[in-house]
Image (cartoon, rainbow, N blue to C red; front, side, top):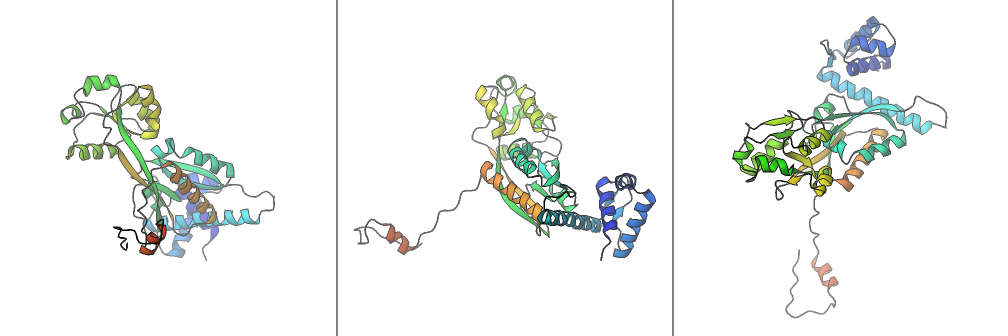
Length: 328
């Protein structure tokens, strides 16, 4: 049986990334924190934390951190079920990772509903959608929105739908840099606006459009969706923006679309624990429900109809001359 004080101390060190800060949060001495961690590591016969700056969990520590967070959520769910209106410890701390573009477009109404339920004290961690899943594996979050369709062992990846991006610029920028179109010669001199250095969406768009990788083009980095859109709208460059985010400026004539026949769709997935505590499961259900309403969903395949069903759908069950119904 693992000691709960030791587990909480370990989780606090991992979350604070420091023995000293963990001691302050727990209101104990630094020596007490070290003793608890040492005792826990000895009981498990493995090293749980790398004593660097910052302190980080080992692979075994990442697994244990997920276990502690699951315990917290299970305990909070039980207290909620047993509550008779008396005071308890309040919302349980919980972290999720959401890509910045989702947070700027379809995610806020979901947050409003989640806050209204008073389920958790929520921390939303933002990152590029290609890099959120690593936070889940490290135990930093209990779920994440990612572009990765494959879930790691012990996790599930639920398809959410696709976000659509289109390429925009101002009329003035187009006249200055792209008067004869979005061609390679112009791309090499026209500044692009990207989210950050991990943002691969623009490179993928260019490679798909021209059939080759283009690296040497000027670019600005504006690491927030609103700043990126504002940068494009002020004429700093051209770039890819979620379609829903750009609609207003497009209708006002502030922006023009550069590649109307070449939208980019990014499939998103909600990665979460395979065995979810009730509170985490509620959050999963909220996210999936909201995404189904706001994101582009795949078309459902045409329904197959049996020969008998096809005959039953005819106006009459009598044979129709020249009509042949085959089995599906």
